[in-house]
Amino acid sequence: MSRQSSFRTVLGLLFISSLTISLWLGDLPATTWQLQVGNPATAQSPDASQLVQQGVEHYQLGDFTSAIEYWQTALTTYQQTNNRRNQTIVLENLARAYQQIGQIDQAINYWEKVITNYQQLGDLQQVGRMLTELAQAYSKLGQNQKAIALLCGTINYDNHQDNPCVPESALQLARTHKDQLGVAAALGSLGDAYRLRGKYDLGINYLKESLTIAEDIDHLAYQSSALNSLGNAYSSKAQLSYRRANSAEKIEYTKKASALAEKAKNNDSEALKYFQKSLDLAITQNDQSGQMRARLNQIPLYYRIDKNSASVTQWQKEWQKAYSLLETLPDSQDKVYAAIELANLLQPIAPAHETSPWMRCYQPKLEPQAIALLTQAVKIGQRINDHRSQSFALGELGHIYECRDQYTKALELSQQARLAAEQNLLAKDSLYLWEWQTARIFKEQGKVTEAIGAYENAIATLETIRSDILTASRDVQFDFLDTVNPIYRQLVELRLEGDQTFLKSASPDVRTQNINIVLKTIDGLKLAELQDY
Image (cartoon, rainbow, N blue to C red; front, side, top):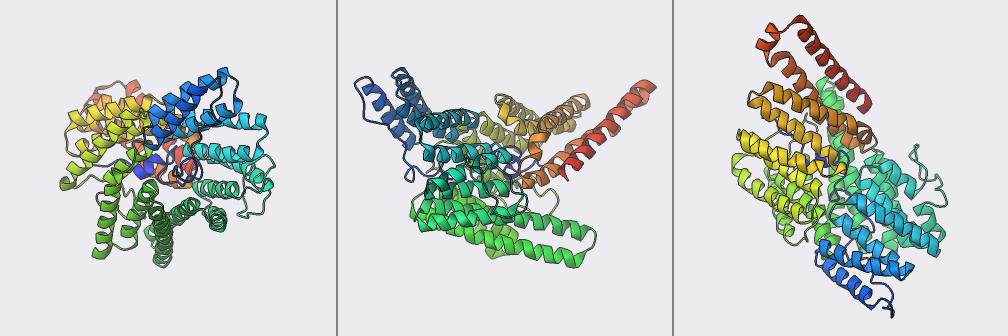
């Protein structure tokens, strides 16, 4: 039974998981930037100040939904009293809270209002910082080109850092106002954005510059973020080399394949060093979220670098430590994704250079723990009203039952995953996966007509998101092809081989129509391959 793309890969198709990208301002621990309460209460708004304080307290406890309710009420009061400064502070807090529960579109809406208010207040240093926050939100949506435009204004195509940024960009505003914290944040976000576009060396240069500034100003949280992002950049370089090694091996370029594989391992080793440094700093700051992020990033590398028993043991130890951290995290989108990722990492991931390494099922002995983690993820997603993370958790659960050949349960969960994805227009990247999963289940049940319909729905969804994927991470596009290719091919096979009795008895016009549909599907696959090239 084929397994769908792993959560780590799938997440990146349009939206990059907040556990695998480094965020520089809004999602750093609450101890490194402070949720703001605003100016002392005035005669007109004593209750508003108290509401903001109550929101801060709930946020710090991880109760983001309650925090939002308090702040929304306070915002209304400040709007009625025309207190723009305090309105802006509350809008900032709301943007951060919506990011925590995965509602990035809402967060973007609030960041834009914050930026407008700071412009009107003449606080250009804060405008620069908030532009970085907004850029990070767009990066979460896979819109890295938009993020780069906000951070610098121009896209760097030649791998040199000396290209000037436009005056109104986040980085240039920070430099103009000698805001070293803002510079470090903008450089880090810029490095991540270039990494996600596949320009790894340029991304690494920006990230190293950010790390140097964070060290100069002794900002441990920014150092941890920069180190984690550098680990991600070297890990991405490793995966690219693994894939090239695999391609060279297929055409019997043995020497070249060996050199590329060695290069990949060296990059993985470098990534592991950065992740460990990031983890050490996160432990120093008692930052559980940062610890979780670093550990989840480390785990696959132990197995990729060396599959001997010592590495497997280390992988298992790191998994257990990450699992223990899970309960310390507040309910958030990050926690949902961490639970799903832990389920995926229950057994070693196949080497990155193998074709479709994620096409697998859990070992039976691991299924109960995977189900428990995914069920927990679903419940958290429901509590924070995050449809997208619910969609992934439900879909992964459905796949376990697909692997078990329990198709009724698998179909029920797959349909729930589809419904969750349809609740949010920003979850289209997961929708096609559950349509594909539904198609596979119908096929196994012998329901050819229903299977064909589900395959066609999956492809139709892919057509609507293809342009977004092409502007997202190059890492994602590699995996996109591995994930998408089987959908087209399985549909072609089903149409050609599925219901032979029907086709033999069908009229020539019907058979011709079926062949034309098959040819159109093959053309669609060729187009996807060309666009991914």
